[in-house]
Length: 129
Image (cartoon, rainbow, N blue to C red; front, top):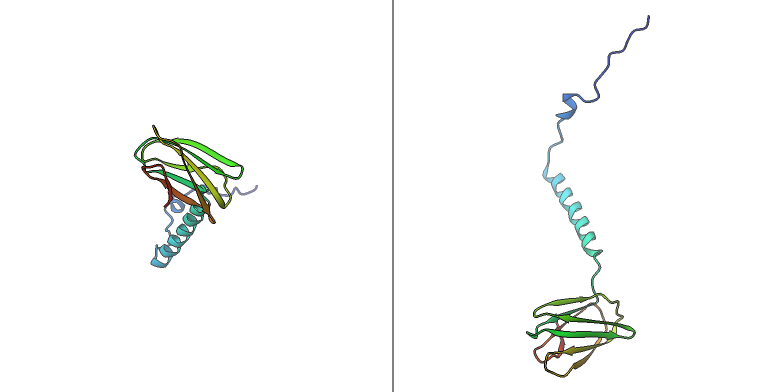
């Protein structure tokens, strides 16, 4: 007759309580560096808007941004920031600001590089930040 083999369980208490290697300072440093590199890579791949408009006028305003064929318009509340989601090319940007009970104010800025951050003053003028 044939001899039956003894069966071994798939998981034993010894495999569950297996001792891990010690967490030495060198291993912790390597883990921290790898985590930092992954976080930096994730942060660098976040899409950034080309233009940010900050409403520092203290009033609700309507802002229009134009550059070539790309244009965008939005109403901004007090102390709000608008990350313009249009794709603008570096060059001349035209901003039009409509304040309540005032005529529309138009400002043209030459922006050789993007991203560009601008703020709306109390009189409706646009200034780079």
